[in-house]
Image (cartoon, rainbow, N blue to C red; front, side):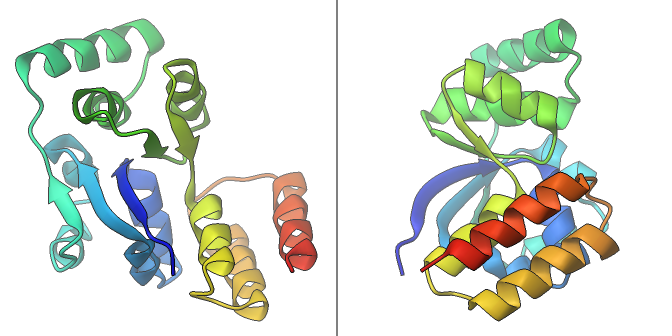
Length: 166
């Protein structure tokens, strides 16, 4: 299995993976960095998250706090997304995981590779953590039983990606 060395996570992927009882898929990452603001958004599952040794809470330095404030004000981002992007910049981490479309778009403009929960599930298939049948089941469960909003078109695209996976 090829782990992604470092990534920054916003609250969404933590919450949505937990809603489908698949938080363990974060083992795909060697180190997941996050901020106290993001963990506060996950307060209902924070105790569960603290059990994962690959999740590291990182403090923002003064320059990064200013950048987070700028992002929140300029782009109307929530504090979690803004601090997550500032942490990516502070630690020179290229992968940012969030389920917020606007935050992903801003992350891409800033030069980061932004992905969401669906990408984590699909990457887990690619890395043979789960098989095709389980991947389809999880995508359907995410679509029907989680608070993540995604369109029928995106659901169908994900199923097609699974079907086309060799």
